[in-house]
Length: 200
Image 1 (tube, rainbow, N blue to C red):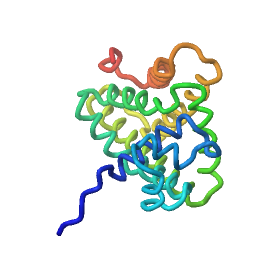
Image 2 (cartoon, rainbow, N blue to C red; image 1 turned 135 degrees about the horizontal axis):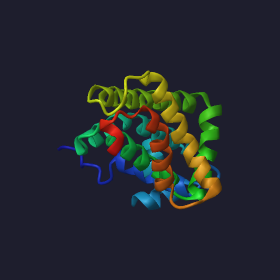
Image 3 (tube, rainbow, N blue to C red; image 1 turned 135 degrees about the vertical axis):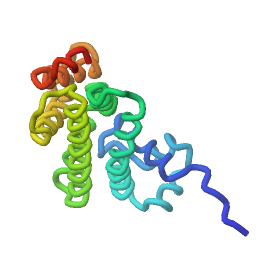
Image 4 (tube, one colour; image 1 turned 60 degrees about the vertical axis):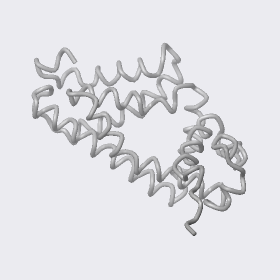
């Protein structure tokens, strides 16, 4: 007899954990919180992931594996590489759409920077994201939305502005994060745009 399929997949549980992480810092978050969000009992999380640390690490790894897929999905929606890039980064910043969720994100970042296992995963995520940004910039140069430029350096700057814009918005709190992020990215890209890309 074949085993019964799991009613709630690991991916669904990890997505639930990511949502709870926006509302709870590492000290506050409990397996019970995640279980409630995922619609399972805490014992299910213990059976599949073991400890809270292992659940958080698995959630971090899931975010890294999703980077390429997220960029591929965005490419399928937009013909313009620059429109793809800006819209995707605006969407990616939605996890920090409130000052409270940004504060929680910074609390988890402390773990990412001090725990070697978490740091390795976070570094891989940053590298994957920068690589995908560079690919879109290369495409933008190819279709003449951007002037010829050093796309590696520009990708690095875009990633830095992306991370910094979230903190900037959380401090100044003017308008929405999405609008602030879009404005920051457009300002950074403006000097690099070709005549064709000016209207994007």
